Image (cartoon, rainbow, N blue to C red; front, side):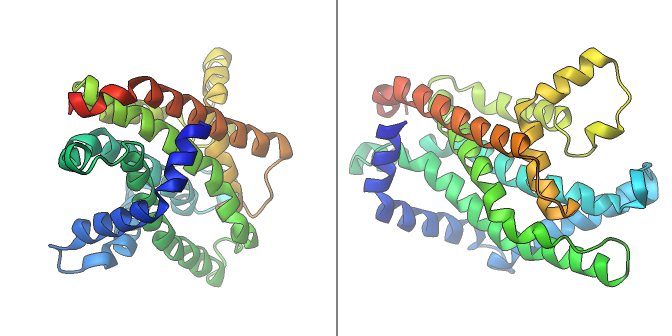
Length: 267
């Protein structure tokens, strides 16, 4: 993990250039360009608000606005899943750079994560604006704890970087992984408290225990407490989220290091 981080720091200038290139390439052919960074989460909020207030109409405790509850959990997930999906193809897409320029392979999953992090940061005004509108109309008090949201992003970034590193290296050697990633993410999405609250479930105790042991439960809970709940997470939950982030980052970079020397040949 230390070596991996040192390599990223040593090549931080190159990473910055590649992140800008990635963002420019992503929106170059679109009419609205970088405005999609704001529009994508806004459209997601509108769609989920329509589905879960008009079609399903779930019962949510305390009369709280479910679309905002959902959006506060969905936003960090969009950052994580988008980065992991792109990480599965980043080595192949950057094969010429790996082979000709001899760039260290560690930088490419990092570039993917940082590009999606920039998109996430640009989407935060949509979240703040939605909370402000809800507070203006008296639907939900404005969560002033949202100012601490950057702290909740730390374990998300660590987790995403670790998973992205492992997936990027693994997908080079096992090409089927690129097709499996989406299905694995779907399984993780529905087993994490993103579209539901664990407190609102009435399931078998064994299944509830499994859901609570999901490491993503603490990540979602910390982020949502600050962005929607208006309360500081409990110390145990916050520490669990941080330990999950550090553990996943360590494991992911270790997996990457085991396959690092054969990445260029496999690409």
